[in-house]
Length: 380
Image (cartoon, rainbow, N blue to C red):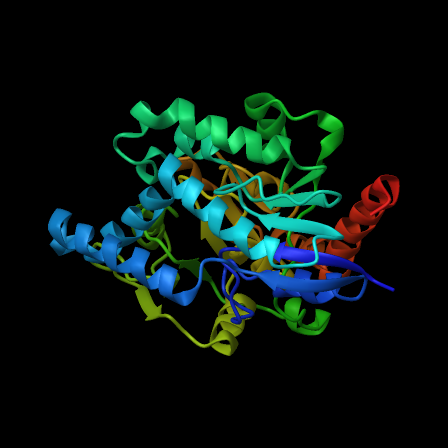
């Protein structure tokens, strides 16, 4: 008989390709546990929060509505009152269950949600301490006044877990250093690549000189840096192309660049398989799915050293890792690789090897095995 496992996920989505979707994980865990989804952030709750944030965005920056709306959503979640309200909603939902087995919480914006005799796990791409240090744009303007109370709540939630999983070693270190978690209770478990892996023949086929930038946010992901670098690269290599996928740029496209917008998944795959390099000089990005997808398609990357990115792209093997906000190094790294087709081809071959790290089956197995061990020790 399988042990019950209650998934506490405020971002749960039926869209398998959504950035926050962990359906690959839940489907895999269902082979070992009796999985039940608990999302106390109902459509009504999300709509109410969304409407409030939209109203604030309209008042604050109507000419930059999309960016301001998402900023307001980030701010709305990072207050003690929002933390407490979400905790109460999830606790009420859990109280309606049998109260046996284990919980698996995604993220650190609520909790602890507990029941006597249950074992508790959580999974994190980052935490609020990391965001405050690196990308304060996501923090409410009045956060200094509420910082102590918010961290008290966040710390209590994470310290109540029997085992905490993190996407990266970068986040694991923060859990230990910033939140006081015992090292033995924090484990790195990378998220899986959610796309089907193309055959090696397609991955290793010849490609034209084309750069790819795929992102849901332009500035945070370094789109302006890509434009600046591409302008210089295009001057040196007039035939070079740049393709943008996803969010629209907040400045005019440079000559030689095309914006495809939000494209069907098949179109994105074709871009991965036809480009020479993907550029991701992000100012802040915890563990981007786009780099795992590119690697699965044999596409080397030139990236920043933000957060967990160096744990996806191996410097000198599957791409180049550089400091953030460094356009000259971005230019020289791209040109150096384009001038060395044999090295670029070797990197594509290495991508074929490294992509196995993000195979969904192995990623699920790592998490499931660790959870079973903890539950067996606890007698759950």
